[in-house]
Amino acid sequence: MQNSLLGRRKPFASVNMGEEKPFDFFRTFFEGVIAGGTAGVVVETVLYPIDTIKTRLQAAHGGGQIVLKGLYSGLAGNLVGVLPASAVFVGVYEPAKQKLLKMFPENLSAAAHFTAGAIGGIAASLIRVPTEVVKQRMQTGQFTSAPDAVRLIVSNEGFKGFYAGYGSFLLRDLPFDAIQFCIYEQLRIGYKAAARRDLNDPENAIIGAFAGALTGAITTPLDVIKTRLMVQGSANQYKGILDCVQTIVREEGPPALLKGIGPRVLWIGIGGSIFFGVLESTKRSLAQRRPTLPQQPNTKDD
Image 1 (tube, rainbow, N blue to C red):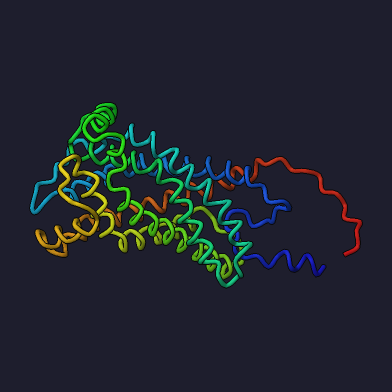
Image 2 (image 1 turned 180 degrees about the vertical axis):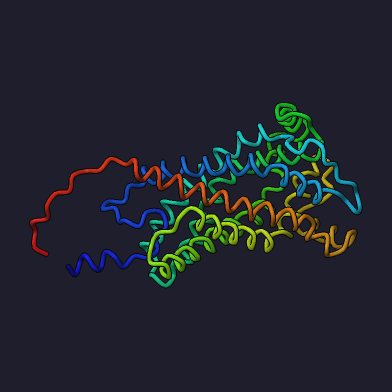
């Protein structure tokens, strides 16, 4: 009975509240891959036009006009990257989170979620960055198709052109992933403790929207810097992150670092709602399909 009570005092596992006797890394990874890939594709397809407008706002210098045509330009090519990137992120995040929650004391669960988000972000960045470069070059009208974009980037800039702005991408996305998932997980823990029950899909979606919108607003300057570095191409207008910040502030003023904050907060807020709603729903569905093994009676004395 004492062991039973101790087993219940684990309020941190947001994926499956039931404890699994041996930790099954491969099953957790596989389920994370499926859930993450599904959620990523749904979000990207629904919200791509808002992302395009945000990118064009950030890439425009001074008072340049924003073109509202071709808002789905580059979607197909982007999905080729979004699917594996989202799958890898969640596939790495889930087992990392479960391991870290067991290693960290209960009062440091936020640090475990933050660290797991950063680890997932690093793994996914190897896929995300080339996809983001191609997508943003197409969104700003530099290329008309993903194959042309890939071919011309390789011929003009070499393979390293696919990782233009990689440092600024990590500067933006690692804090973003870590903060967003940390806020989301901590809010879920608090809400679950108050409600004394599992959360339903609308509740997960509302918490995801709040976490996404708040994180999106905080990281907007980092997103502007990343966009400018990625779309500059072979012109090399900026020498690096610091030079990019200094040039933007000098030529356009500090408010330029908040360009696109409206569409970004709207896009990520709605995206967080859809992503986390689909993510939790898919994980629950996968958990219900697991084969149930017959439990052996415990005849040993403690």
